[in-house]
Image 1: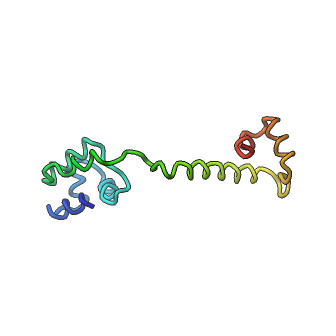
Image 2: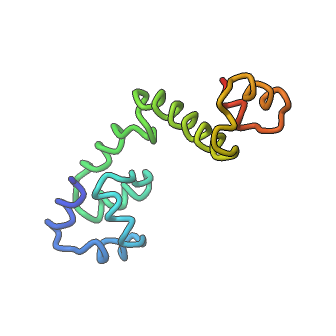
Image 3: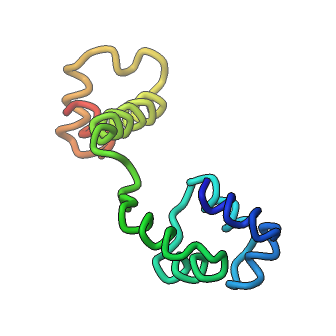
Length: 120
């Protein structure tokens, strides 16, 4: 949001700012929306071009470079297992995987890696 305010204050469009760096204007939009964080060298260029007096550089130091916060890690693990289960179930015909005994046999036979993920 700060980046957009600085760009508007200078009177440039995203395209005009992107040409000065050089970047694609869609990349500027991603930075402004917070969907991506500019690399440090681009951030320094933006800071200088927009006359931010070091404000953008100061903010960059505080940005966490993690794609997902720790609180979401468990959710991502469950989502991966659910996707594997969905894929596993799609491999068999309807009702084929009804018993855990059959699923364990498939897992032991090593015929399906996804079955291993499903049973665990």
